[in-house]
Image (tube, rainbow, N blue to C red; front, side, top):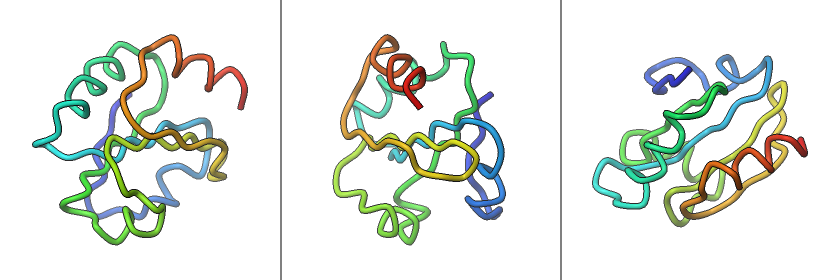
Amino acid sequence: MIKYLEKEKLEDVIKNDIWIVDFYADWCGPCKMLGSVLESMDVNILKINVDTHEDLATTFGVMSIPTICFFKDGELKEKVIGFRNKEELEKILNNI
């Protein structure tokens, strides 16, 4: 399931279960490539546009995009920067 963060609070969305949070921008080539990979995965995905949600990008120390954060029950478990293929993402998911 892919969800785009609008006006709801991040904490409310990711408080239960495992979530991949994708910090991206519409103009970012690697972000578009990652988006295709995420669409093929069977996991909860929350996409956060850094141009719209600069405050959250700052909170999570996003300096480069894409930045992918892995949460379990609201707790940050892993953070990676840059494009990753499906196998790499699944390996991280299996270890959290």
